[in-house]
Image (cartoon, rainbow, N blue to C red; front, top):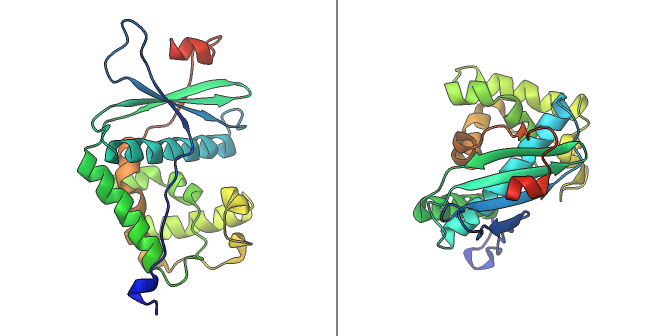
Length: 208
């Protein structure tokens, strides 16, 4: 077991570029996060990649709320080779954001072996069952994990901090719903899929 004094420091860093709009006539507190990516089109891989990017923006959203910029809504603009996609995130109370971020850090510190293979793509695949409280959610998540492992060759986990993560075991099926509730319930209740911006509208137009 780990000694309490040796508890590691967990650093949570944002990954999007954040802008506070200050143009005349802009709504007060209007915040925009910009995320660059390479996903193109409406296929499954592209939709899952955009879902990950929106979750990246949510971490920044929570960090800013925990730092005092609470209750500000946020527009998220995803820049891709085939155009721009947009969604929005509702404001978060400072304490709610802090509690969620602390929970993530505490779980990382408390886990003896964080090396499960539980890609976020599997969660994004099962958003509707998750939101509806499907009693078969654990089974569906388990199947989605194996689908990411095989059909999607591990998803973004190929580039994560754990070497050969795709070769690791998935969590026990009985634990999946509890893990999702702790890690993902808050952001997934808020995020909505990013939709393609109007044809011909570029990033400058989105930010005007």
